[in-house]
Amino acid sequence: MDHQERQDPQIKLAGEVVQSFSGIQKRLLEFTRSNAEGLGLTVLQLAILNTLYTAPGMTLRELTERLSSPKSTLSVQVEGLVQSGLVDRVISETDRREVKLSLTTDGRERSLQSAAKPRSYQAMAYALEQLPASDVESLLRIHQSIQKLLEEYTSR
Figure 1: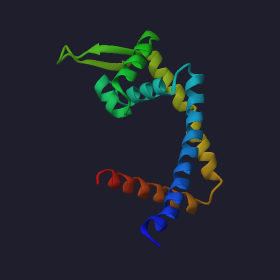
Figure 2: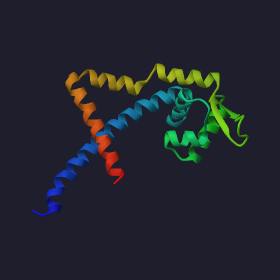
Figure 3: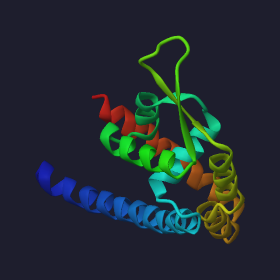
Figure 4: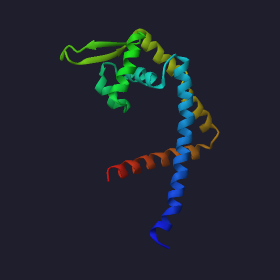
């Protein structure tokens, strides 16, 4: 049996694991999308509001890094949030070329509303409650190990 034949079952198993992760992520995104739409926002707009709630005064560049989204995409979304009265642009006192983003009172309220109904977290909590605590602990430990190994693989 050559290397390729030995590897095929592992590739198949890896595909099943990736499909499992993708399925879970898809379900959680559906809950997040429902939460965002209930607040009149897109998922990305909600992510922007929640990020600015926890880290006010970020620049667009910092927000781009934090959310791993293209600057052009975030720029359009931020503009929509500014027009909706949820985000303010404030020129930096130390560098007039730098614009900091912060939430308005309405923006803070919308972020708090999303946190009050975290459907994806509630759904996950429900699912985890159906499992034995030892399985949940193992699941978390295994996920953390996989994440670390994937990071190692990326830096190879």
